[in-house]
Length: 349
Image 1 (spheres, one colour):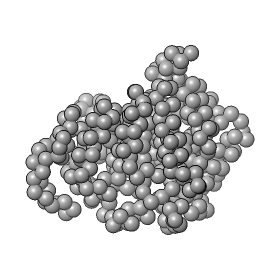
Image 2 (spheres, rainbow, N blue to C red):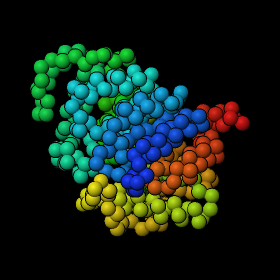
Image 3 (tube, rainbow, N blue to C red):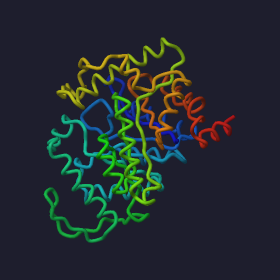
Image 4 (cartoon, rainbow, N blue to C red):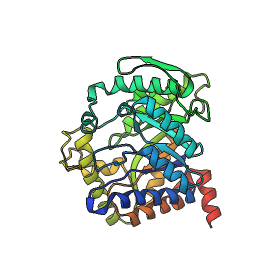
């Protein structure tokens, strides 16, 4: 199992400044690179102070200038918000500027507040995404591509420059529904998923969808990977665990507002709303714990066959504590599962 740090900017206090927020994310990426993490991931969200990143490809190229090894995953780019004729060229450039370390994670969008303010109703996002994805793949693999679809109609065009590698960067699909995971895997995509703050049995179903598809592909899907994203933080006492879980609950009270709730946002700040899930239920579902508790939970994920674990540790705690968690996780947790991380730790010693 490999490990990734999700660079998911959380901006609850405007006085902190966007420059400081993104500076923190860059420092986390540099630390992850030094510690031997497989990758870092970059979100895309607009008009909101959670997962705030309106320019993921720009940030990916910035990360590449300051790191040497980590893959840079867009996690995820919301295709219905982009014109594929423009976006395909931006992808090619980002792939060049990151020297081939870009992995393009794509999805349909999850927040109605965000989508609808860009003129994309949520009930259209699946159709828009499907048409956009098909067109993006054609633009990256073919020349003189035309369109006569529901959302795109244009005469033949050729994206320039052409991708350095045929088809452009590897593509990863963000999917939550187990049957959706099955069908996307069958199409040849890497998969990223999460049960969010949900049940373990949902994760089992998600993994099953991925494995069923690979089993039916007669070896064609042997190199496809399944990545799991979970909120997590290393703690060293019960008091820390309680405090970090309380902060995670506050974070999810805002996340749920725009994910499944009414989408109440004031001046870019998502309002915190009461949650139905208890704090104890939330704590059981997240990866907040001592190194040994994290090892125990990750062992279950490894047994399920997860290929990459994405640690999402930016949910409102300060930068010093977050950097310490990235370091401690790399030194005390990840080496139990990743030969590369174990090698990096030995080299550092």
